[in-house]
Image 1 (cartoon, rainbow, N blue to C red):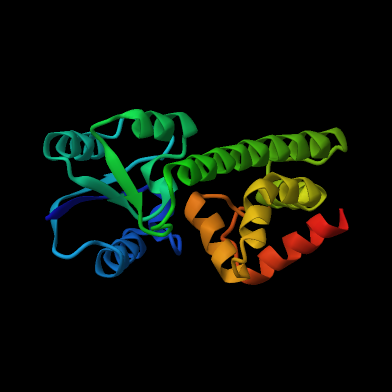
Image 2 (cartoon, helix red, strand yellow; image 1 turned 90 degrees about the vertical axis):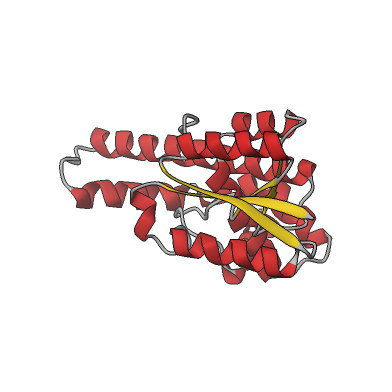
Length: 220
C-alpha cells in the first residue's frame, strides 16, 4: 500500500493570502490523493509549519522527513515553494536516497522538471528583490522621500513596469517549451504557479497573463 506524509507550510504573512493558506493547501493535497494516488493509499502523518520557506530549520518538516526516511513513505506538498523557497534545499532532498516527494499541483512532474521549476522560482525572486532595490534607489536620487507607503509603492510599480521585458525573459525557459509541447494557456499558468514563479507584480499567473507574456516575447 502506498503511504503518504502530508506537509503544509505558511508564513505569518501568507496565512490570510488567497492560494497560500492552509485550507487551500489541504484542498490541493486532497485533490492529488483522490485523483493521482494509487489505490489503496494511506496517510500516516501530517505536519504543519508556520515559518518562512527560506528557513531550513523547520521543526515539523524535520519530523516529516525523519518519518519518510524511517517508513519509505512519500512526502506530499501542495506547491513546490511550500517545501522550500531555496533551490539548494530542494536539490539536496532530491539527492537523498531515502526521501521521495511529490507536488500536488504538478502531479506528473519529473525530478528534472521540479529542479527546473525551483531554479526559475529562485531566479525570479532574486530578480524582483534587485529590481525593487534599484527602483527605491532611483526614487531616492530624484528626491522622493521614502518614509511613507505611497512613494515606496509608486517606486515599486515603476520598477515592475520598467522590468516587464526582463521578467518575460526570466520565464521564457519554462514558458516556451510548455507552449511548444501544446500546453494550453491555463496549463502553462498552472505550471508557473505551482513552481512558485510569480508575475512581474508578484502575483499568481492567469491564462491572460501567460498570453500577454508570450506576445511580449514574440515582439521582442
